[in-house]
Length: 299
Image: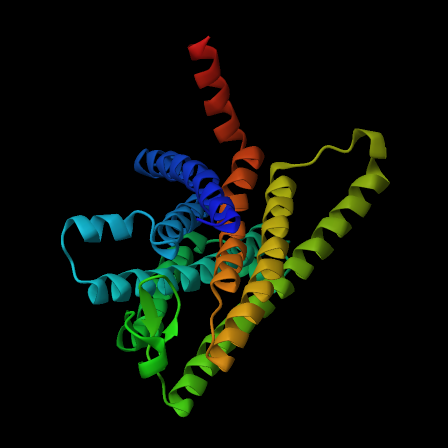
């Protein structure tokens, strides 16, 4: 195992643990009927990130399939398809998180204010349609991925140690690239637009508060903290996404994958699901209080 792969596995370990903790926390909150609409989104995002870790690196899922004596071709299709769906869900849910917060902090005079009353219903419907959309869009990968045999003879593109993409017609490959790129560009544009909108609202509130009170007494409201957290996540996601997009798009276009480049791409892909739960834990007072209570009980 190379040094880069060791770093990747260390990153996965750091990413999985806080995500599992968050999933348990949000599940407990939701089952206890004390949740907010944002908790539903965060819970979904956490679940998606855990699945990304498990399927992207063939860490646990591969071992399960091997113990069940499942064929390598089925294992490749299942892990690759699931990972692609989860990556699609990650960008969709992050976009939804940004839109949700923009609606939440929007003033009563804005056009977005009319959505506040039924926000929980809209969130549930949006999550359902996102799952349906990504499960459908990524289904084509079931036909073009399978067990790796011999690259030189079949012109397969190796994407993991045991899996590869089968040759595609240039038209089909172009349609897949256009469809996935259009989806991602649209969602990133929505995230950037809502982020700019939220920054504008925060600046206006800041100026108004500064005018009424001394800046030394300025206290960040829970809404402001939540907005700043989401803005941080969105900016980080967009940066990591475009780095990943450049690597994967170039590899798919040239139909070539280098093991070092593949590992580096996974490191970039895992950066967002690794950082996200840590940011959420630090910024959520409920989680901090739970951790403090656990710490006091241990002592």
